[in-house]
Amino acid sequence: MFRIGQGYDVHKFAGDRDLILGGVKIPFELGLDGHSDADVLTHAVMDALIGALALGDIGKFFPDNDPKFKNADSILLLREILSVVSEKGYNIVNIDATVVAQKPKLRDYIDEIRKNFAKELNIPLDCISVKATTEEKLGFTGNMEGMKSYCVVLLSKK
Image (tube, rainbow, N blue to C red; front, top):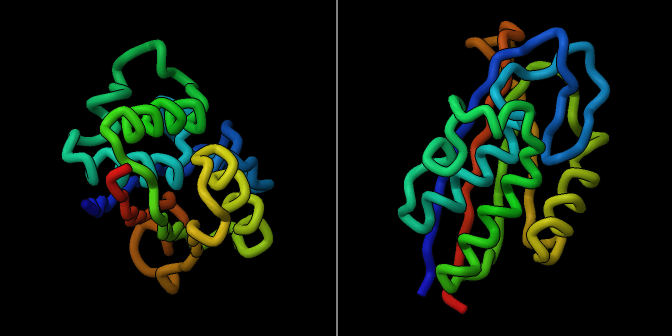
């Protein structure tokens, strides 16, 4: 049995934070605003995994009004979601994620992000796709107000 999940997340830029994507610190003058570390990419991946299991969204697991998740490392939260996936009897087949941002250019960090996800999720590197694109200076991402990320995952029954 297979299950497909789709995830989406968005955060606005903040000047006083590190930019973390896929658990990797990206050198840039702006970070993302959020209750946790605001890792928009990891949040979309978690949302897709949770969605594939029909368990709601990441807010159900990690509410943004719960102080214990203030500045939380999203990779640690991803590990919790991976445990849920396993407990439900599923394996991750593949992940396809896209970060949408006018800046910074992410090309030089994609391989590191993919390797980090492969390690954390214990799946082969060639089962993880991470892409980055702009919106050609249109909309809130094009106007440098923030970033968003999309993700699709495929799970298979163990």
